[in-house]
Image 1 (spheres, helix red, strand yellow):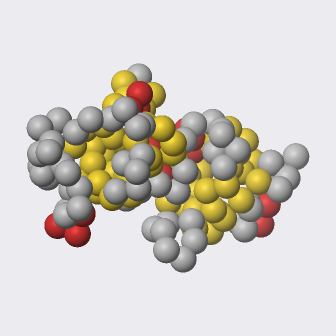
Image 2 (cartoon, helix red, strand yellow):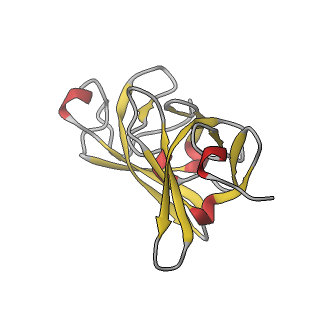
Length: 149
């Protein structure tokens, strides 16, 4: 079956966990090789657009574009909170090992002054995370290294 840009644009992009990342708004093509390089997804008004390379796309379905892995750029900028709801900072980097998330680098900014953590950068292992949704919540057992009491 032939596929046109009309069959892709405007469709929802769905990650392997079933979460809708947004709506496909652009199709990126390599003119010399006549192939698709990827798509750009509009994640909504308050989030930046997300480029997803063709290697992340499992299939172009009738009603959605299905991804075979979660693009790590999805997590950049996520707010990070303690289990008690104290803002820690934002995800600045996602650290991988064999294409699996191992940890997150968290940037601590001045606006996060309520945080008991006084450094500017924090590495948090995926094992220390309670929940990932629109933000990241650390486990209740998480302890800040060198935290002041």
